[in-house]
Image (cartoon, rainbow, N blue to C red):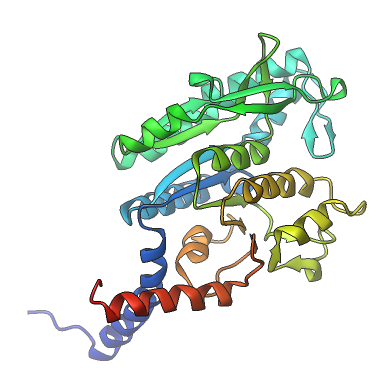
Length: 317
């Protein structure tokens, strides 16, 4: 017979109980809801971080969430372009994509990055299906700006294939290639695509996972990290001429999703272990929360607690 240390055992049990107690109302809120996760940055490049993010998404699915993953692959694309001798250039946070670069983007996003993520997720069971925005005509786009080449501006989202996969209990993993109105294909910024897809499928929230802590008024000045803001404040920030170019696609996508009726958008740093679970299942959360109401994490938590208390009173829990 083996005896455990009562102090250590009790301490760990109490801590675990506190964590579960804090998570309960949040779990109740998100069960059955669809959450779009835009996944990119260093959290995708590091194998350990990638496995942790995939594990967190799997955990959310086990709690009854319906995750949809929209991923980028910018680092892998840039590396391949440099190896092919193609200049890597960005304008207002969006990659200049020549015809030659477009072939690399398509190959890397759909044939390499997407399949790697699908493989890693399916180590936990056959639960993920990889597709691109071209599959099922999910994303239809036109040329955004001749200066950007094959960068597309989304003109229509046909969410049927995503809804069907969710209905069949799969996790859609989407690379952001779109069918063009000119008969070709376009590269779509993954941040922009996530907001459009979230709006089209009526998602409960969008969570942007990158390698920065959230939205900054003056990136990378850490003192300008914004914890909470309303959609109107986000629009005001977007019009600021001093805003970091890399923040433009993120804010643009955020505003589109909120304008389409998505209740909230959150930005977290995926290099923080389990950032996704911390944001979704704890009182304080981390990163930046943007909502149509402008409520803070604490104010939103008060509403959730009130909702849970009413359920308890009526013996629904």
